[in-house]
Amino acid sequence: MAMDVKREGVAEARRRRRIVYSILGTIVLALVTLGLYRLEPAAPAVDRATVWVDTVKRGEMLRQVRGPGTLVPEEIRFISVQTMGTVERIVVLPGAEVSTETVIVELSNTELEQSTGDAELALRAGEAEYSSLEVTLESQLLNDKAAAARVESQYRQALLQAEADEELAKDGLVPDITRKLSQLIADELGSRLEIENKRLVIAAKAVQTQLASQQARLDQQRALYALRLEQLDDLNVRSVISGVLQEVPVEVGQSITPGEALAMVAKPDDLKAELRIAETQAKDILVGQIASIDTRNGLIEGRVVRVDPAVREGTVQVDVTLTGELPRGARPDLSVDGTIEIERLTDVLYVGRPAYGQANSRITLFRLEVDSDIALRVQVELGKSSVGTIEIVQGLAVGDQVLLNDISQYEDYDRIRLD
Image (cartoon, rainbow, N blue to C red; front, side, top):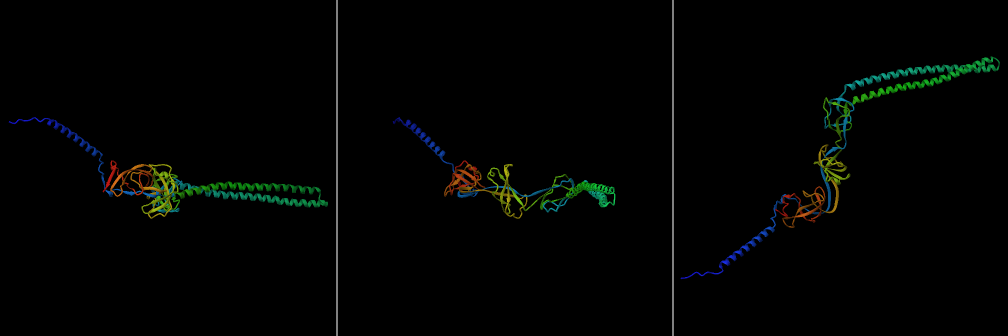
């Protein structure tokens, strides 16, 4: 009869193998986990048709800024009157061509019409009064001249008589008393003649003074009448320049106060562009810089003539005078886009402006590997910017191809694949 023999150490060997297997499994699991941890995530695929790829270049880069704007007339005249009135009729509507003879609005003012009639009657009365005074004064002056002439005649007769008596007295033909009496009469008439001549001079001056005073009153009446006529004529509101009527902000029956604007006229062939440039881009704009205005029906050359010192709603107004010929359809208030040339940078690295790149900043871009569909993320330092290009200071080289789209959804990846 066979008996089982007890094997020494078998259970111990099994236990050791299990421990070894456990240790080996733990090591393998740790190595696999470490490998998976170190393994880079798969590069996400991006449709090549949806990305914008540009190549870094070296050479001259034209710096420009761009902004929207409108065409406005260089000369705009607001037409007003200095007389109160009521709108009777709007003769011409906005859009019509007008000249300095064109009546735009007709006003009425019954008080002004009455005062004009009164001023005319006062002027006519003043003219009649002046004529009457002139005749009266001339008559008085003639009487004074006649009186002076009579005294002069008497003086000359007395002088001749005195000379005759002087000769006769020498021959003893007349008494000495007669000679003395004749000389006395002549001397008296000479004094009277001198007085009459002075009175005549004073009378002539008095005539001039009275006529001048009356003429001043007449001139005042004539000026008042002319003013009333001018105010009456102003009720027919005319354009002060030749151009196109832009606006008539009044209605029939409306009462108008002195100085109130009744119309606006502009010269349509003399336009400028008012551009709105972002305040971050406007700091380098100077008067005299070259500009190009896009009317969507042609480009017009221009030059910066004014930069508004104030910022309004994040933009700066820049006025550009137009030096080129206006295309058809160019008119006031037309929406345009303007591009202003800031400077030309020579021998610089540049590339198309990224969707999210700002001047003088540091960003990350995806750069395509040579002869590969893989794009790697790189740090790029940007310099000066333009409308469509930007300077590369550091991080890229000539010939590098980079993705300029906004692909921020891949910011957690260091590489992407273009399909």
